[in-house]
View 1 (tube, one colour):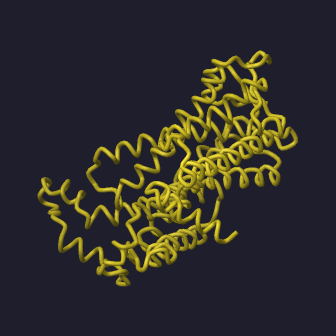
View 2 (cartoon, rainbow, N blue to C red; view 1 turned 120 degrees about the vertical axis):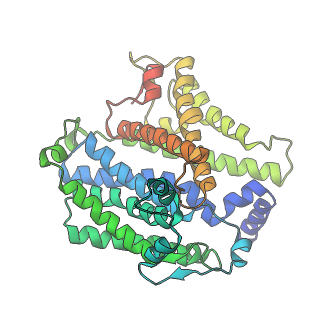
View 3 (tube, helix red, strand yellow; view 1 turned 180 degrees about the horizontal axis):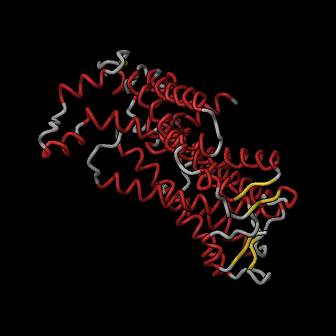
Length: 387
């Protein structure tokens, strides 16, 4: 068995694309969005069981916080250099001198308060923008913990510091030993500015009127009404497990046994959608293979079986529009480079737009899982519903 696994791994390394995906760190990056969604489902399900009710505002706020932490993690580890290039690095791996950024600001920043023409260039200079970004980076974290969790300031301060220390340690250890040395600098100034940002976010929320903070007129989800679509979740997990098994088999047949099949994995993705979602749903009157197992099906709004055009719009919206946006977002994250610069370039704008659209679609999907009455955008368009 060990020899078979080793042979399959070596086989994967012969393909540039697959060898990248087989690297543990790339697997982590690809799995992170799925893990984020799963963590949100489990945490929200736990909250619903404990509190007996949740509002849609609670669902969105909790998921936004988890999503932001995942995005922050990607931002501090991406882009990933090659192991060989990291091994050749000779720069400093850490800075343990607090407030070093103040000396760099005084020495390198062109700011002259009496000359307004220097203000914009001073803002764009890395000596100002990098510590300023580290401050902004943790403001949402402190704001959320104060607004939704009502944590005391000392606990928010400790949490902000601990989270920042985790991020910095990730960089110092070369992604937990994956690299031979740190490929980004551990900086004590980052710890200070991140912690200050968390405190600043909490203080900013404290100044908002209580009635603004506690206002919530969104629909209420009651635990005794069993709002979570567990059958739908189970069917999705099972269908995608089947897809994973099928794709591994396809890869072995093409690469090892030299079967004359397409090596373009974009076509394989379309085949997956057609073979495991569209075709079974059309043949079994709205049920995929997972739907047959968990008794979950797609129907038209009038309760009748969905037509083929409705299935095309439903699955096309999910897997031809929404899911590819996730792949595009990860690609843009990897291309972004180091911390965002003060002057936005085209990739920065694309990343912001795609991430925003993806976040809205994620809200829509999560609410559909936690509220049986909520319809996805593609379900509204196709006039379908999932039971």
